[in-house]
Image 1 (tube, helix red, strand yellow):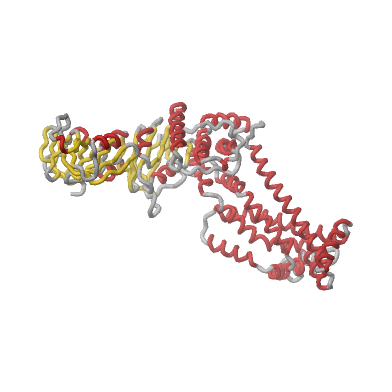
Image 2 (cartoon, chains in turn purple, blue):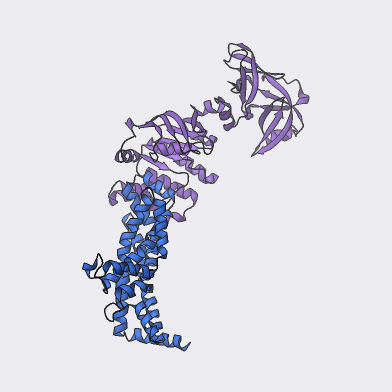
Length: 362
Length: 242
């Protein structure tokens, strides 16, 4: 549906993009994730033809978008866009939703029922005559979605649609987008800095960091097999670097970190420097007094708790094992195990839960 | 103090009795300044729009020039227009000197800068997000401009009201171009100057009160028109009444 080739954009700072190449398929839910200022917004604006790229091409449904303003307008009218900060015009909700249809020169008798249907879609029926500027942030964002959807776009672009919203509105918007996609089979392209949101909603995720598309894949691939240390850190893993592959038998390897050896699955050859990514929720903790533990867990690493950070119903426990390891355990098990800063613990990690990547720093 | 109370009594008397000469002066003031305001608005709103929406070199400098011209003394405008339309001037053939038409020209020139400048501020006050939203909704360049001007309608109204205020309150142009000819080019401000000079303070105050009354009605009318317009657009774009 949208093919992006070697796209670059330069603002001299924030929002710069370098050499993005990507294809978004028809009907797909594609999400860009990345930290603030990484260029997600710029990329979405480029796709909506609100900006001109410095170089590279965007092909929309087989058509090159580098054409005259009339051609770009015609393509832009096949897309709907929802911005991070919803801007409503100082008039009624119904008028706000009607803009796209009016711009396309539709007759009032056609516009009215469409506006009504769009407001029903977003759950704002009866809001027609309300002044749009008096709505709450969540309601405004729903108006923005109704306004985009009323023109029946083939592609719906959402730039961090929930970044400024409370959790209840966020859930409402997410449900709405999922429903829209199911009902209308719209291709959805969304950007978010909330990686969990990306995982919840998207078929495929593209990670953008520093203006580069650094990894594209399913949520599983990105969350469990990040391609680099930066990506790993962004998806919530502290990568442990400085290891060396000591043995490797058919992908079943031993990787040494100081005086600790991990069993893990990797194709890296013996002698290579390696970093490992271990998702904190895959790390179990038990008091050091229980040694030795009988379990299927192959990697048992002794260490000392250095920090404990409450994380909702969980606690992030930092363990010093000669290197720093993070474990995410429930508050309850933390209490039951009697863990505290300074406690001696055994960290357990399954070999299959360890993602190995080459250590880029060598 | 008695001059002021006298003036108020006299003003009420002049208004209630509809004194023909005062009514003629007030009507001429209103006609000249309102016409100048309308012409200036018809120039300043598109001009402001053009400057706002077009990118060209020297834009910043142009805005500074416009803002500087807010301070142009009415007598300087009067002088320049005088030189242009006097018998020997380049526009002398139009015979505008000492006519209401000449005064309209002068007041129009006088208030175009301030109106343009305030239209620019009004448009700049519209969030960039609004413009992006309109473009993303598929607006053509022209549709976008129309909607943004509509969105800025109340601030643009202020620009027009202020322009009218400056026009009806000014003396310099009216005196130099009009010449304060009784029954022909005498307006409220020039009449006040004359009557004050002759020591008729009460009458002057009465004229001042009438001037403000005229201004009140014009401002009310402009506000009603603006509100009416916004209600209209709402109806056009689809209210529930069908």
